[in-house]
Image (cartoon, rainbow, N blue to C red):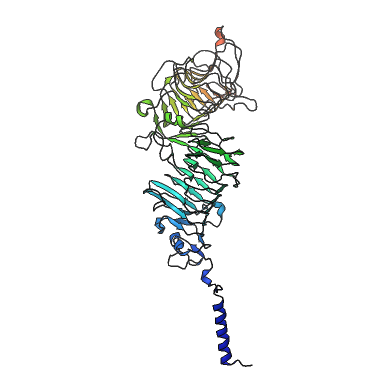
Amino acid sequence: MKTSAYTRILVVILAALALAACPGKKVKKPDEAPAVYYVSPAGLDSNPGTQASPFKTITHAMRVATRSGSTVHVAPGTYNVANNETFPITVPAGVLLIGDDDETRKGGGSTPTSIVGGGGQAPGATAGFGVALLPGAGSTIAGFTITNDNPALSGRYGLFLNNSNVTLRNNTVTGATHKAGIYVDASTNHMITGNRIVDNGGSSMGSGLDFGKGGALSKVENNVITGNGYGVRYDVAGGDLGGAGSAGGNTISCNTQNNLVSFAPSAITITAASNMWDHVPPTRGTSSGNDIFDSSGFATINATPAALTSNPCASVTLYVDVNPLGSGSDNNPGTQSLPFKTITHAMTVATSGTTVQVAPGIYDTLNNNETFPITVPAGVLLIGDEANKGGGTSIVGRGPAPTGFAASSVTLLPGTGSTIAGFTITPDAASVGHDVLLLNNGSVTLRNSTVSGASRYGVEFDASTNHVITGNQIANNPGSGLGFVNGGVGSRVENNVITGNGVGVEYDVAGGDLGSTSTGGSAGGNVISCNANDLVAAAQTPITISAANNFWDHGAPATPTVGCNAGDDICDLSMFGAPFVAATIITTNAATTVNPAACQ
């Protein structure tokens, strides 16, 4: 059946009337759907932003992807000023900015997906405070390494959250050395999860995550926050680190000053349960290295339950550099780029677990204002150049010995559980009654150092136990190299070269194990050679000296010589009668030294 022209016209009119009667019913245009765009350093901003023809810059993509729900996928590469990026990069509201498709790499991988730069002015901040990324309300940033490295800025933010409901997921936020990796302004309800927030706030007041003006109702979960000036800082009631909706699971560890600090001027509550810290329970106090510091005294901080991180430390490594042409100053924060100048000052900042890395140079009073004796706090690791046994890193000086000790002066006083490694340690001039190191606290490790110049003892063991003395050159001390004067039981002495001393090793009491055939004992391996006497027993009660598996001036096929003439390996002063008594000295598996050559 044919349709007349009149009929067709009538149908069109009726359809038009129907549409007019329903003005709310519009046909959705294809371009109104959320779009997906692509960016690659190999692309062009004149391209349509498809996967086959991507944009070149994130900056341009953000100008195009303005509709909430749009996704911008960014290929691996470096997105910086050289790539024609304009900073700060502003992410429109509701847009998803996605970097590495494998978010477990957190913007890393063999070719990182990196946003590097900063500019503009942080909203509400003074001039010179610039930003890398400004996320819009409800936006998502995931899978990037984000670094604000602009040297022209006096204050550097990685991300500045002044809009609410932002998701930061599986990123690495690093290198914002002069302010904060993530700064939370007057905004709420963020999700910060799975990120590595590391090495921000190189200045002592900078931080990894800073709740400066907001952050309430935000959840902070499963992040690694480490190596920053402060780990997490609260100036106001901010995000939940765990316990009030957040699952916690953050590792907040090894930040230079404190892992969590509050500067709030009025009462706030901080929930920080179910996280991993450097100490369990988290330590609290004003000193660097404590987990938690409530500076103003107004914060109630709940950090229970807490767990110990797998690699705990009290702070990140502190650095010291004496180089007169370098940047070392005791007014610095002690970072690698802004090191301290003196070991003395570093020891006043370091706490248990802190590593103090000392650059090559001479650390003395005359040229570097060191104060002696230098006291190393309990648990601190003082590290120089181990590969060269301190060949170019010298601690030179002496100061009054503690009251009650026979020594008149000392260079170093190590605390309980401390480590000294990679130094040449010596007095600044010949002196009567000088000890280089006085071990009057237990469990000290002395490793890969050169100890020389002591008129009394290179290393004196007082009433202390369980030391490890390994890999050292203990040489050219006019007195004794090692002196077990009043302690040293449970200590292991292994793989040292003890040579050129008045006495190599002196035992006045039962002391350290020079080498044992028993399981768990010292492995020996010491070269005890070319001393006036290599080992002297001067005990007034019976003792046993374990000295197996070592190298002497006289060894296999014979045994170390026993006598008190110059050049004899072992001198037992009991041969001269009272008050000395004979010691039992075990020298099983003795060998003749080759390097250095034996003195016979």
